[in-house]
Image (cartoon, rainbow, N blue to C red):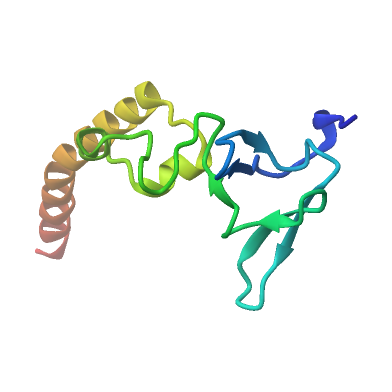
Length: 127
């Protein structure tokens, strides 16, 4: 039995091509991760002798999202400033993201006024 309170690593999921079953790596005693010759992480099931990329593939979450069917639509990516990599790091708090974008826009609108004030002050001091 695993105690997840003390594990500090991202959840890695694999999907079996034959059964389409998805599970978190490490929840089965037969799961193994290793680095291949190119330095990429691979999965291997010690029980059935199969692994990535032939019999299993990595997916982003228990629903089976992967690089070809990311959970964010192209419209969401554009609207919220998301990138495909955001899907790899869990959900994005869109309300917080919107608030940050609004604050950034406000600061960008105030920047020309601030610069104008700074330069006008510097010009008065030089004279």
